[in-house]
Image 1 (cartoon, rainbow, N blue to C red):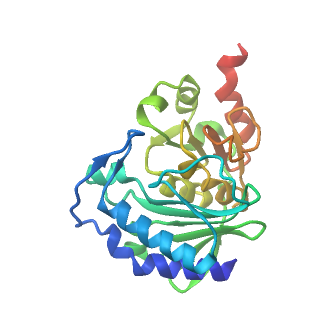
Image 2: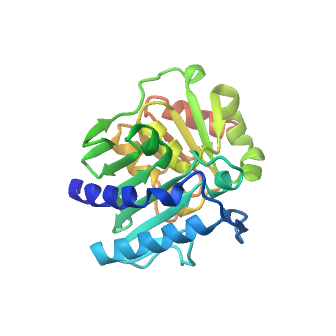
Image 3: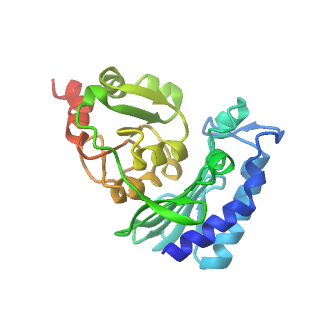
Length: 264
């Protein structure tokens, strides 16, 4: 699987210009309320061709119509440019690209490319392997990453992803916001890698699509954390709309906060 990581990293490095901050593009609204532009289309086309040629399995993309859950036993799930809404507002650093390989409904390999980190520091490629750890590529070699050891909820950093209006109206998420220091909508690519690298302690993905939420599962697990839905059940292809990812230490307490109103 590490050889797969190297192949995919080289692909992203060779397409770094697609994410260039100076790129000017016409943006359009999609039916789901998100935005897309020519960078989404270019990366979608290139990544589809690349994955199909190298791995000969179906590719399910955020930018193309798809049925869910997939009928394929083995497939790639991709979000070619995560954070297009940010790009449309001039927040070019807050974008990424995510690709995960699934087998029998479970992720076995996930990769996230954060172009801004690659341009600035040369370490913008992350990957996770089932039973093989979570890693960040440091210029010429991968370095293993781990979740934080934060054990007090009042000192925890919370990152939130999902449609802004739906998240703002969700009482469960607001309770977590009251308990922790929080940031919202950095994009899933940034958020999942912050958790796996120990910079954030808890991540909420609320009201999200599979093409957004599912890429964080392996990163949380392989970096030493936990992922469940808001009721504590494990994520699946059909149970991924509302997910809680954490460093593991704070997971039960975060779940208790999420479900407090429902129990009262």
